[in-house]
Length: 328
Image 1 (spheres, rainbow, N blue to C red):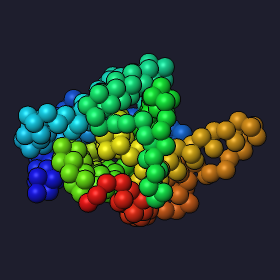
Image 2 (tube, rainbow, N blue to C red; image 1 turned 135 degrees about the horizontal axis):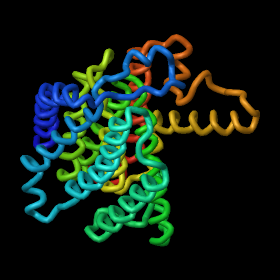
Image 3 (cartoon, rainbow, N blue to C red; image 1 turned 90 degrees about the vertical axis):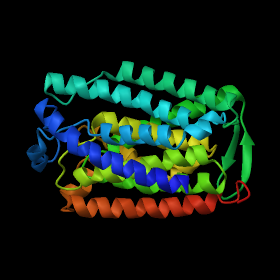
């Protein structure tokens, strides 16, 4: 029941926050700068308010304070750790967005400092989860229902790589109206259901808050978007997704629930690698993958519907893969 309440409360807070935040962002001229190398029709989005991710970040904070406080009072800190982990990435994204708005161009923090900050957050989060008993170095293999023990140092390296990679993959997916938020809602609901069935209410409340907060945000972000989440939102969202997976000790499930994130990232890597190797040839019309389909004539609405449907299938498969992890 509390998880359902977290979804509803987050939706209301996020939707209400949008009514206030969007006019403020417009007044501050916090508009998105659009890359010139992107689809030409995206230039019409120039100036759309960014940093709208603050809407669902606020919503999750309210949910944690209003519904999750009993868990924290009982010493169950997994939900708080997950939100704080995601918040670190949100702050990194906010600095990135601020620099973009200030310079009026689509470049923010340089790659080096951004990577080091993300890596530090991943290491600290992994240590906290282990110390609090949420995480073990026994890597669970979905479907096989077996675990593979890794040396703790090796697991730390694995976890840091997966966390930083996941966060940035989610960020890449945020490229058209409504896409990353729509794709992430079923992912959040998957974690909410699993947490509920496994008796991890403190994790489920955060997952439910993420789903509800994104639903409230999408009221303003569906095509045509009135606001973008910016790196503030996309990095926070990526942090929340991988944070939930590790807090439930099922990180490999990200391969299934994050199938779209992975496809988007791989398309970018393949395009750049092939372009350099062939001195100018391309595999995709444009990368990442959503732009390839856009250039092929798909509307943004169709893209969102198809990519979200693929994610739903991935989440259903993921559930089948982990349902025997713990007794339900």
